[in-house]
Length: 480
Image (tube, rainbow, N blue to C red; front, side, top):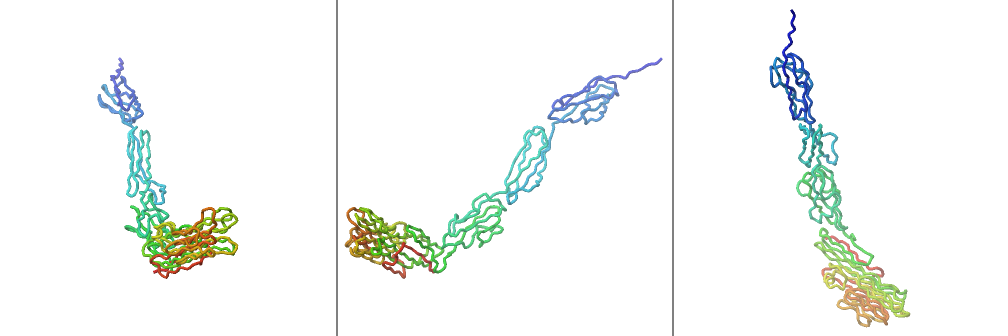
């Protein structure tokens, strides 16, 4: 008699981690000792995290760490579970520090790694002494990521202080936005012929490469910035001419505080206009003197212009006078006339010689010559300059004096700063020369304007009738 005894069968229950395992297979009824194939499927955001037996007689898995494996059925009902966990990624962090020239090195410095859950954000912020903090992030992580930061150097300002002059007399690198370690260059500007660069001064510790006497000055920008100033010195040497002009109009010349001492001032008034070789305008005068300055002073220089030559040749035409006070001439039908020359003066106040404030600040004046009228017999305008301007011949029209404009035997009297001007119809007249007081406008020739010497001048003189061309002012530094 033969018998086949079948093994007992038992039930296998397969459970799963519902958060990260979407399916698990292998449940059923099996003989004890039978090898059962089991399998687990994970979700998108999860990874498999091993099999565990949760009920029944203890048994074994082929490989509990793989999603598809086997389970040996025990001599009892059994329950197993497919476990999962959230998927994670590696976030690598690194940075570079900016070089002094603004570039970055090719390699990065590691700032470590961080494990980030699926869908989460990796944030990275990097600080470093002397550099600007930078931040970045990677949102919704679904793969490994590398976050890289470039840290620019802190920037600082190059600032100027007032010293011999204002900061705006610097050129080159100035202002803000300079990286520490950067090579920068500043230059001191010569203000005028009288004032030139002497040395640099600095507030606090001098940076690397700083040179007190180098101009331009090239140095390395430190952390914290630089505050400096420029010292100036007098650049004038004895007898060096620092100002002259052959053009009419006002000019400003600054006697700088770093150049105290004596200045020789020469003023030449402009002549009146000519008609021909027999009918000439009077020459301008010359005034000269030396004045001392101990503080910075602005000198306003007005240079006289030549009177209009042969300008009035039509009926009732007017020829206007030379710049800075020359009187206008006037011609009727079949006559010719010229205008007076302008004065040249130096004052501490801007403006013309008719201005009371200018006259209060006057240093020196050279009078202009008078104009002339063509009368067939030869005439000449009065000579400008001197304490008393010259008379125009034939008519005998007076020049200006120290206290009044020329008026005797004149068609129109001169005034403070202006030669007499004939603008009305009906009378031919030559313009008077400009001056401290202008010469009068005469029927045949205008009078010359007077010169003037202000207070504080030494070695001062005035002469009539020296200049036969444009007015001129020359200033010469004589030193202490």
